[in-house]
Length: 623
Ligand SMILES: Nc1ncnc2c1ncn2[C@@H]1O[C@H](COP(=O)(O)OP(=O)(O)OP(=O)(O)O)[C@@H](O)[C@H]1O
Image (spheres, rainbow, N blue to C red):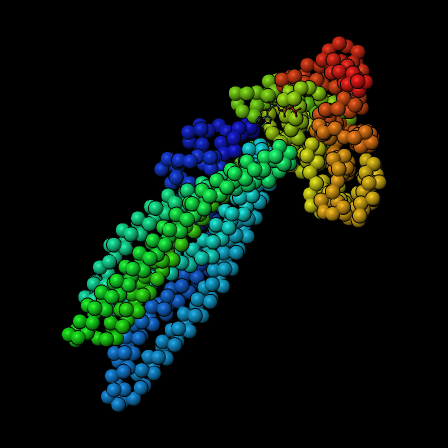
């Protein structure tokens, strides 16, 4: 089943009601029904579980280390009480300091144990955390690369970047500090409460009186925190979008002198973000000071009440000292919880988005049972059989297309903007699958060809002429990484790019885009042609650049075109009619249909659309 997915996240064939949150679709929804939120949380948890599973044993070891570390920490105040109550009286009685020295020795041992286990914990958790992040980054990158062009056309590179950077960072933060803070807080608080009750039930109950207040206060904080957090995320998203749009569109911004208006918008958005952050900090400050106040009041109360119990001889001074030390320990992690809560929320949101991305399926799937091409290699015959295609179900771009291109033919595709020329080319490259009908290469449905066979047989050179960072030679070698230097040079020579490349500061080893490696539009196009020539596909699709080149460059490109088109099937989306003259055949497209088809000379001789276009072009040349 290979229906084109019309939106990333909507699996074909399922009703939108049940699937509209799947994949990345939930990212676009502000308010999610409770049921969906639960499903999303489950999905996030599954991903987390999946990532943690290989480290089960190490995590168990980590838990054991934390327990020992906390037990050692919790033992210290208790040992202090033993030291005071049982170590000092023998000294006062003159029977020597041996008990006290033993207790001090045990305290030292507990302190050393705590330090060593803490170090082991930090090392091990760091190692596990980094391995998990490595795996997560690998999965997300691999998956993004596998997702079809239809996904990327909608998802935009800005979102891809934030998934791979800030979201992964949020999870890193959780693994590095959040997890540690949570475990420490829970163990310390539960352990302390239990120990207080064991030491002295009466005084223990008094010390725990503020607990309900603490619970209410924490709940209030959590609710407020969710609201503030959401506002921070919303405002930061607007800042980033404005920033990225202004910078990626910097040419248009400067050309239209839009800087000051952009600056004004940015100032406002930036200020909103500052405001949201400030309220977050105020909330955190209120919570932290509130906790500290409750903690200190409790300590004061316990000292007062415990002191009177000591005077009445119901509690020993050592137990009171231990109580005071425990209470300090009890409130400390509570303050960290406020920090941790933010970390948890961002990591939760990040996991939700990443699990959504990983759930997306390529809308152009690999065949289960790939079929070989006849004779094991592509010859280049292309057929469209009853092809219907729509990006959005109700708006067909190609209503019904039947077309046969024999192997080795050069076809020029012309037509008004939006006629569907690029769409047709994308179907031959299998960036999309037809909604109905079939596209065949040498009689084999493209959907049954495996990816390497298809990519080797069909190459599309787009208008972007994208050059990657690296040397010019690397860029030419892009589609055939094992090509030798000689082959690279020969390809460049055949295309007519050798001369200008040799003139670059380091020749073929010049770094693209760096000093001296900047290229003109025509030169970039020649490098893109050399790349395609070296890849040597049976079918070449060229989306010709609309930008007009100067006359010498145009001549160079025309010559290169003749070389590259020889001996292969070619489909050129022609914006320059000079290009059309090289073609064996011209197809004129209008609203997704082929309205004229024939050799250029015949179409010019007839009095159809192409003849009109050609005449207009001739007139423009002579005027
Ligand atoms: N990814 C997409 N999602 C939805 N609609 C699209 C998408 N790409 C193109 N379209 C629509 O399909 C129609 C045909 O577009 P296409 O790019 O094939 O035209 P074209 O003939 O190549 O135009 P041009 O000469 O301007 O490049 C247009 O109406 C366009 O709005």
